[in-house]
Image 1 (spheres, rainbow, N blue to C red):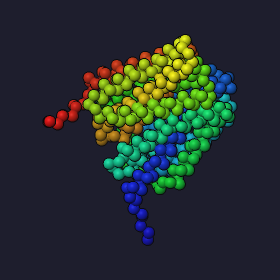
Image 2: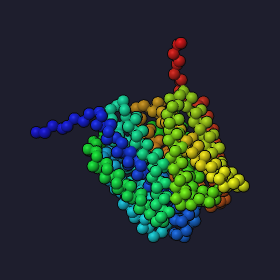
Image 3: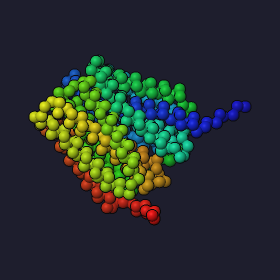
Image 4: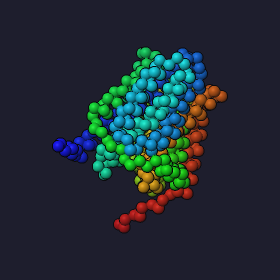
Length: 405
C-alpha cells in the first residue's frame, strides 16, 4: 500500500505563487473593459452612466456573495473551487464578448460576480493551507499581489487588445486569462482539503463596532476612488484627449501606485496610531481625486495636464492601498479568533466600495457630467478621514508599552 508523500515547507511555499494567477485573472476581468467604456456605450446605444452599471453589478454581487459562499463551501476541496470558479469566469466572459445588448451584459456580469466570489476566498484559504503557520500571512499577501499585478499588467494589456479588436476583445482576453489560470492551478496544485464548515453564524462578528468600523473605512476608501476610476476612459478623454491603448498606459500607473501603497502601509500596519495614519491617507486621496476635476477645467498645456493626471493616479492608488495593511491588522487584533472571517468581510468591502463608487459615478455623470466626478470623489474621501479620526478616539486599542532604555 502506497503512503502519501510528505510535502515539505519549501515545496508548499513554491506552489503558493500559482494561486496569485487566480487573483490576477479576477482583477483583470473585473475592469478590463473600462478603457473602452465610451466605445461600448456607443456601440450598444446606451449612455456612459448606464454602461457604468456593469461595474456596479459585478462588484456589489461579489461583495454580497463572497462571505456567504465562503462559509457554505468551507469544507470543499479548495483547489476544485478555485478551478471551477475560474472556468465559470472564463465562460461568462467569452459570452460577454458576444453579448447583443446591455441587458445581456449586465446578466453576465452578475454571473461573474458570483463566480469571482467563489474564487477569491478559496484561493486565499488554499494559500494559507499550503504554508506553515509562520508564513500564512506572507502566503496570502502573495495571492493579493496577483490583484495588484492585474492593475499593472492585465488591465492595461486588455486595453491595448481592445484598441486593436474593439471592446468585445477585452472580454475575450479576460476569458483567456481566466481559463489559463484555471489550467495552471489544476496542473500545478494537488487537492487542498477544505476546513471545518462554520456556517453563516460566524459572519455576525462583522456587527461588532470594533470590526464594523474598520470595514466601513475600507468601503469608503474604495467608493471614493472608484467614483472616478470606474470611468477613467471618459475622464482621460476629457482631460488629456486619451483613448484606447493610451488609457491602458494610465491604468498601469494604478498598479505602480498600489505597489508603493502596500509597501508603505505594511511598514506602519502595526502602529498604535493606525486610524490617524488611515485618516492622513484619506486626506491625500482627497487631494489626488480633486485633481481630476481641477485638470478638466484647467487651461494648462497638454504635457502639464498629462503629467498631473499621471501623478494623481499614482498618488491616489498609493493612498488607497496604503490603508489595506493597517486596516487588516486592526481587524485581526480586534477579532483574532475570527481572523479568516473578518479578512473575508474586508475583501467584500473592497468590492462593495467599488460597486458603490461606480454607482455614485453614474449618478454624477448623468446629473452633472464627467467634470464633477473628482470633486464628488474627494468629498467621499473627506468623509473617510473624519470617520477615521472618530474611530481613533472611540476604538483605539492600548498602545504597546515602550521598552525601558
